Amino acid sequence: MKLGRRIKNSVVKHNTISKRKIIFEINFIIVDVLLIQVVEKPGFQALVSSLAPHLKIRSRTFFTGMLVKKYHEKQQQLKNALFNCTDAASNIDAWKCRRRSSLGETIHWYDSKSLKKKSAYLAVRRIYGHHTYDVLAKMKEAIHSEYQVKEKLRGSTTDNGSNFLMCFREKGASSSLPNYDDIIDEEFEEHLLEEEAEEDMLYFEIGNVLTDPPLNTTQQ
Image (cartoon, rainbow, N blue to C red; front, side, top):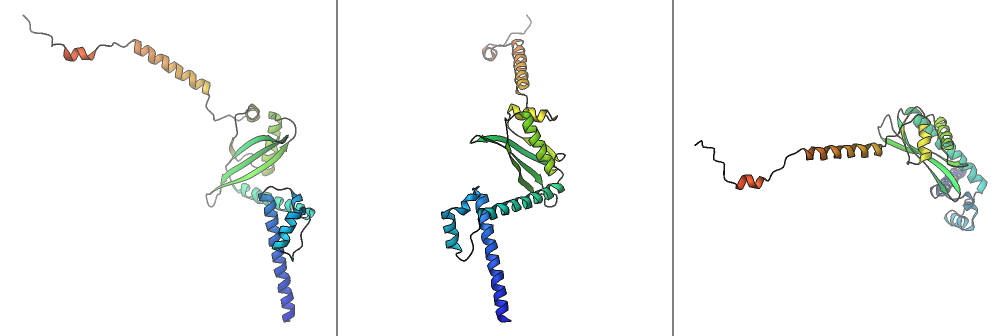
């Protein structure tokens, strides 16, 4: 009985250590945004072997499956959190790096129970083709539909690129940025009115009033 318990406890402990090791390896790949091929590099394998020599080093295929599984788990957690929120806002941007274009969007909302602000990456997607407004609009709509937040978004913040402005205007959205041409025209009109008012004013030297002798108003 004692031997059986020892073997069972040893197996449980070994499995626990193995799972923790896998979690640390996955976290290492995700946090540092590394290629999965790194797990097959001699340096990485030597590091892992020195830390846990009794544990098996997993292959690239294993970690690929683990990453896909973790992605779907986190995605479902985010969907559940957004399902319970009523109002949200997002930041959206597009960029190009090494001849590859991408679209990224973050979402922000308040937890209905704790009233704490929450933030998360909504999506990072590859853009195929040019950054035209219709391509951006389709990708944006697909992301919002996937997470069912289209009716919950109260606004989105982006840069003033013409492609993004047209992307939102095509969907009936309006910008909260001020119209600087109108502001300049209003300030110019106010300046003209001030100049006209100054021309109608009468000026006199107050020093003369204080130094000149008083007028003799006594009737002779």
